[in-house]
Length: 319
Ligand SMILES: Nc1ncnc2c1ncn2[C@@H]1O[C@H](COP(=O)(O)OP(=O)(O)OP(=O)(O)O)[C@@H](O)[C@H]1O
Ligand SMILES: [Mg+2]
Ligand SMILES: [Zn+2]
Ligand SMILES: [Zn+2]
Image (cartoon, rainbow, N blue to C red; front, side, top):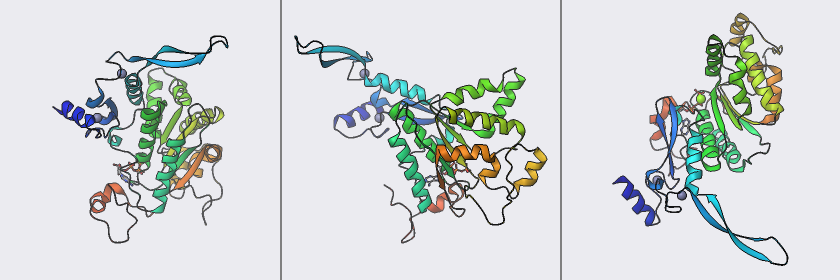
């Protein structure tokens, strides 16, 4: 019945109530967010389910004969859709992000508004195969950094067919460590991540700062930087270039776990967490967006924020 309802809505020229006319849905399935073709678009009226269509083209092959029309077999839009849905399922986006879109992101201050603007601009202006400048979103917990990354990757994959991957940095370190026990080299895991067209690295700066972690991160970012590939980042560490009273001796190399622990208290700058080599590359690869420390944690204040806003607040009117 749902299917008929959706088809009827389409026939009347309304957008499908399930997918809003996007023809695909993103849903949480276990730990991951997965995409599927919406019921309104499973049966394709364009190609009758064949998956390809004959398209009329015009071309001039010789001056004598002049322009001629001819037919070519092209993949139907439904084939493209199925391919992109399959591609989304390779992103490995966490299931909790299945709902995240640009439409349901609400900025509560100017920095979040700018963050959304930078992410949307990146997504809309992305040119396949070209060098595209990525972005770094820095800010406190629960401020929608991963949400914006999920919305961006969703757009790239499902609207444009770009190959992307999402990784949370400490899970990546853990995966590589586990791989060592199974006789895999770090390179086997880093290799595909170095080569994917767009990579999102979440929680940058997190971890123990051990030599293994620093080397892994250095290799991944240097390889992407050298190849001119686009990388997006989110971090809880600050991007502010200098802070009064901050230690001036930023570690440029690797440090021991004990050193890292004792530095934890005052090392809140991303530059100090990842070292000069990586930070310098980020400056060239990305646009920086910093959300202020007082940006509300959406996880804690969701109910309060979902109530009607106070007069004159920054909150978007919503839809
Ligand atoms: N501005 C916002 N508009 C709508 N939803 C938001 C916003 N900020 C956060 N959320 C929602 O709140 C939850 C937490 O957001 P998210 O995981 O993106 O935060 P984060 O900044 O990545 O936090 P952390 O630093 O802890 O990783 C998610 O469900 C997300 O969709
Ligand atoms: Mg996050
Ligand atoms: Zn639909
Ligand atoms: Zn079709």
